[in-house]
Length: 158
Image (cartoon, rainbow, N blue to C red):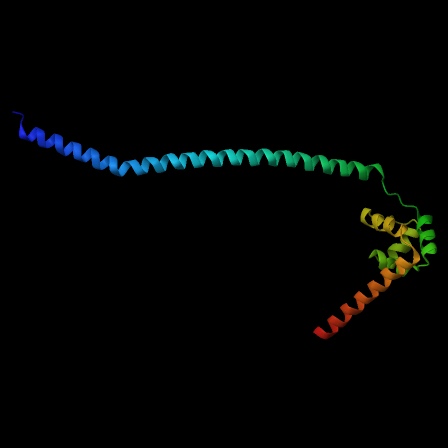
């Protein structure tokens, strides 16, 4: 007959293994689920990174094309052209200065070849070349209305 101590020890070991299995099995299943979810997230991140690189290359390509198109047609400035533009639009130097957002002195210096406009100002000049007298007058009136509103606002805040 086997020793009772040995039987008792074997039975306790068996019950312990069963209890441990009962507690570990849900953890094992959760761990496997988490591993699958992590792998899926890694695949998603890799896909997003690939799309990001493709889009960044496309945007760089588009910006290069935009730079190339703007470089194809550089804006040039001729003082006589500014004088004739003012005459065609029927503007005084201060009116043109207000339209362009520069000082009267800047217009004078440009017309007398003392200085040349910056790129932003050249772009503004280019847009003014495409406008007619009525459009220019409408813009001037809109600027006047805005300046009156600003003055009133400042006066009321004092």
